[in-house]
Amino acid sequence: MNILFLSIGRLEEISESGIYTDLLRKFRDKGHNVYVAAARERRTKLPTILEKIDGINLLKIKIGNIKKVNLLEKGISTLLIEKQYLNAIKKYYNNVKFDLVLYSTPPITFYEVVKFIKKRDNAKSYLLLKDIFPQNALDLNMIKENGLIHKMFRNKEKKLYEISDYIGTMSEANSRYILENNNILKKTVEVSPNTIQPRKVSITEEEKIRIRNKYQLPLNKKIFIYGGNLGKPQGIDFLIECIKKNEENNNSYFVIVGSGTEFNKLEEFFKLNSIKNAKLLEFLPKSDYDLLAYSSDVGLIFLDNKFTIPNFPSRLLSYMQAKMPVLAATDPNTDIGEVIQEGGFGYWCLSENSEVFNKLVIKLSDEEDLVKLGQNAWEYLLTNYTTENSYNIIMKHFE
Image 1 (cartoon, rainbow, N blue to C red):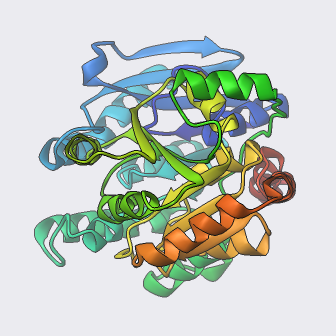
Image 2 (cartoon, rainbow, N blue to C red):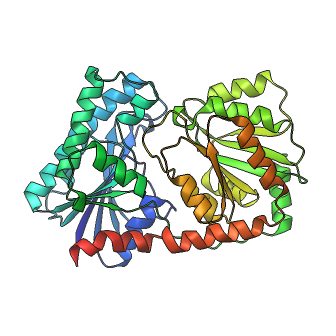
Image 3 (cartoon, rainbow, N blue to C red):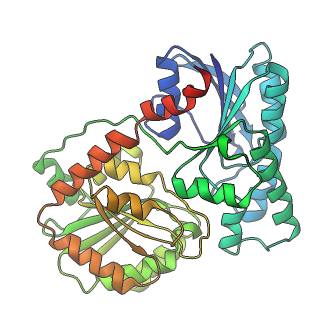
């Protein structure tokens, strides 16, 4: 099959590990012809270009800036993406007849592109639903309900669902939500979760000590690591309250690694307070972050309590691959806590009471057998969240 994958992600290297690159390599390895349309933000100062990398056709399309920018610039750039992608695909993939077009949210503005490919090539369409927008922005008071922006993006969201032959959601809660809040045929919706190609990683105790010393982390405390976006979805005010509570503990230390719109708020908090049990690190190269994660003890997940949509952060997979227990503090609508607890690899609470969260921190700090919880995470990953599973879920519609 000829497969077109649409993404606003920055896919510069196909060999990198990630939920999309791993899946694309799986399709390639199964004998399919894979074509990608990915984004290059204007800030890179690089042009649109078509390359063939590791057997995959990679079209890098120059677009506006959509990450780490103000809401107005992001909104304008997002609205222009559809036309930019359509023009680039017509120019560079004009002679390719696609059998399947895969695309993810965000963004929701691929409707015209998908419509064009379906009509031109009689292709099937499969949406990998990773984000429910604009409701998530509504939940965080970033846009006004029933305002012009909300109505415009909600209309685009509905049209994208309508043109999708299949919609793969991240979890059962995701499936229930979009079926209850949209006019979608139940038979088109299925769980197609975030997945990776698991890699066995081993790190010696000597290496762990070296890494902890490198970042000036304590050797005699359990290291709780958060790695990823630091924005409004993570509920930074609650995270700050949890860091404050952790100052009372003797056996736990937080490492917060990432970047995002709320990083400066966290940085200011650390500057104004003498924090002894936590450290804030700006974005690290993936290889450095991975080593830091493998040298840590527990993975942290935070989601703002105001969410009405069931988010399911993909960073869960990196913790599981590192064979780490997971502690999640989220809204009541996501089912990530159920997965963590049912899988026996961690704990969950609502992101509203830092005292409750801190009790779980203490419980994990005193846990004698974190290795067993970490092994449970690894085994759950192998059973449920591998790219082989994703490939089979998608391809069953074409066999």
